[in-house]
Image 1 (cartoon, helix red, strand yellow):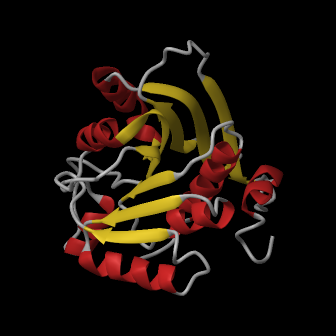
Image 2 (cartoon, rainbow, N blue to C red):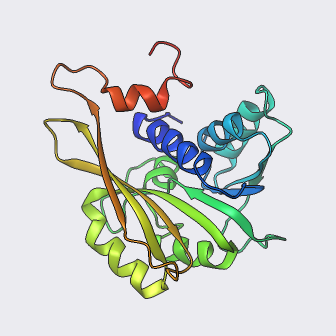
Length: 225
């Protein structure tokens, strides 16, 4: 499975958001872990956090296990090959993260593994929010990486599930492009009455170089920044 730039940016952003929290994160659930990228990035910066990384695709789960086992954080991360919709977790999590399949009701590939990675016939966004609501601790946070073109649908689904969005980062490939990804930070309720935070970031500047903001977030993960 390929590691995408937007997923790396998302992982670095989540890590910084978690580091800024006053309360520590002891338990983390990574839904649809794929290669294990997000779990490994969080483990690198938060050695006190125990991570359950669940993946429905057997081959992807095996790859994630291999990646974890050759890392310095193998004792922190447990890779689970299962369908999150019917898996029974034994605890509530301080943090839930997910870079879920993007596409619903769109043309699919002839490759079943690509469909699992990119199309949500196995886990719709509606189902994902149900899983989050069921397994997130009362004061916990969740983070999602989603396509910007589904922004209005996302808002409606959050309202229906009574989930509160506390921060949004709108992401573009370059300063000349429109937004293509939305990073979301949320929680189970909005009783704190804090105003929704908005921010934006571009990966490339007008010279097709990484932006300063991108470099600042990824410098600890990319070798040549």
